[in-house]
Amino acid sequence: MSLSRFLTAVPKGLSIAVAIAFVILNVLGVWQAQRLVWKRNLVAELASTQAQAPQPLAAILASPKPAWRAVTLTRCDVSPDRVLHMHGLSDGKPGYRLLAPCPAGDRTILVELGFAEDKLQPSFSIEHPVGRLRAFDKSGVFTPMNDPIRNDWYWRSPLDMGAFLRAPDLREDYFVMLDHAPSGVSVKNLQQSHLTAELSNRHFEYALTWFALAWTLLAVFGAFVFQRMRKS
Image (cartoon, rainbow, N blue to C red; front, side):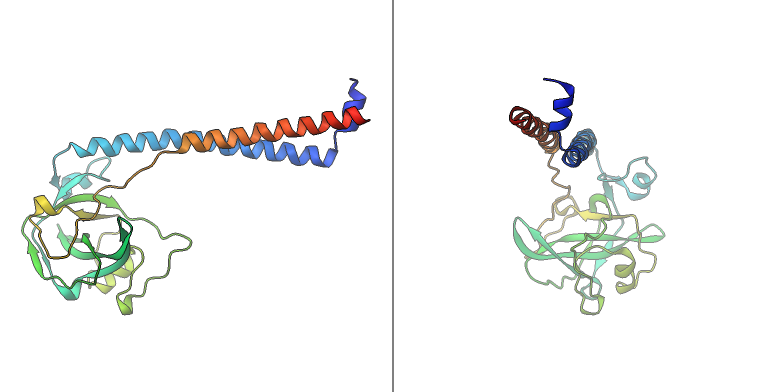
């Protein structure tokens, strides 16, 4: 098997395309491996917050990593005219996430009161709210636009929601997921929202898939070249 026969059997255009694809697939595999480490750290960090007792919001916000921590707020009065209804799912069922503003020191913070299958119009007070602090998410590419005029919401937009709720001082970094039991909240048809995110970690599988595709491509290309050499 001479080098000249090998070079003759290798299609130059195809070999360049295979080389580029091989590099891209391996880069994707490395990226997923890096995501695996990141996700493991995130899961461990989330698990560590489960055992930490609730602390006043101001103290948690001053800590290095406020997200997911349990916090306590001052008294919050919920009225129907200051409740947002955001489309959502709970255990596969469509409905609405109820959001309301609550005092947070010299500012206001958005609180997710819970989930309901219908547009509830609750009116109640929470003497000692307890919940989980979460960072605001950005809207996805396919997320519909919010319609403040109709009180029709698809994602948490602190700027738009602050204007609708007449709360221009609404915090734009974090919101709170209300924990019903320690907060003493029991409202008919208002379900407890999931306090923490359900984090899946399949990045190891994804990394193996990308690496396997890369080397399978190389093997197929090698077999193709070998067949061409045998015929030449």
